[in-house]
Image (cartoon, rainbow, N blue to C red):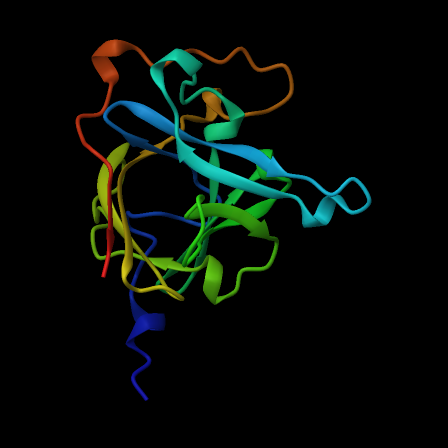
Length: 176
């Protein structure tokens, strides 16, 4: 078989294991929000991941917008501390296409892209993310690295993204 996936050098640029990123569209961040809860078993809680509205006042400083990158060869995963450590997945049906349901990094939680920046030191990039389980589901978002001083943490004073720094892209979901 072709093992070229494992030989690709991801360390020069691109998304690295442990990076904290935010997905945005039209200058607004996506955020994790609880949609169902099982009080008897919090592990069964489901969280949606959706674009926020201006009126909600989310910024990239909000922990609910932060995703921690997991990398396994060419496959990417995006874990949310605000979704109880669960990973982003695409659902085939339902009101909420993007959700956090599972802690495991399985095929439902794996994404790939051919748009990763190759240069080191990048801060944002327009990426088309394709879900491994549902390859017809493509999420096009501006992915921004969250500076370490803005990452969620203990008593960190988090600055708000300035208007001059707002990304200039739109979000698009293509289902084939």
